[in-house]
Length: 352
Image (cartoon, one colour):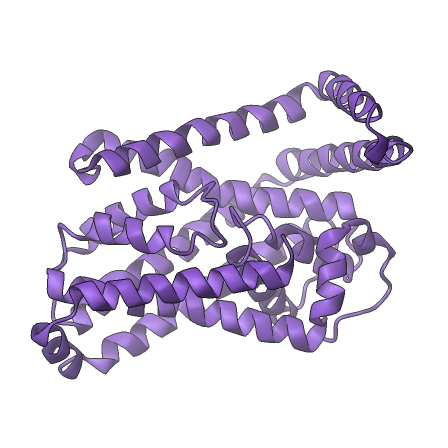
């Protein structure tokens, strides 16, 4: 999927989801709630979101420092927001990795080490929801009140388990993994399209896997406090993000327990892994509607979800897009996402 196509789908599905929420949940009570909204809570929500980005950058700085690179804070902000933009316009948020690899490489971090940094950053975040989501559901089965929610939860649980097993296999059985990759690429060599290409791609991939594994060992077997600090920053980042929802609801005059909103968001974030639409657009709004419905009055639910998604997602996708347009350019971005080898070859620098 091209960047342009992903952006079109993201915008189209997002606009459709917002329109449906407003059309089916807005009435005279909604307008009254909007007129009496307490702006202080919205400002506080924005501050919390900015704090969450700061914690995200701080953990990225810790990871890059582990490989001997000091990452400037503002450059880290640009990297994280650029990552957010591409993640939100690609299926399963997969598009963010190439731009993060590229931007880390511009600071002298090799592709293998950049992949290890991106892997840890993603997996530590995923760990919170992979563990927290099922635990929350175990004690609060009422959150999966419909068949659709149960099916979505089971779907994600299966794919998440497969992902964890794959990375455990890659880390603990590298020789076996290498043999499997050899067999896979030898099979591809039979097809005319891959003739002459698969061998070069295989050697490049195996080189990256070897460097990834050695870099990952450095993080896990080196100074343990760095990993603990990354986990701590991740917890603060998630807590800051999760506090936004109850603050918006307070501003709209809804007295909802903070812990209840945390439980809903924990399950929601778990269920958004492996969502096929760009950035989970459409599906995240639908799941949010279903999960928040028992807590939030119907006349406020739609507008709450729109404000919440705008502050936590939409506005930062726009900011990330503007950063990319100014510092990299959309044409060059297409090249980066099409061929990750450009990350290693490209000698151009992004200004600090």
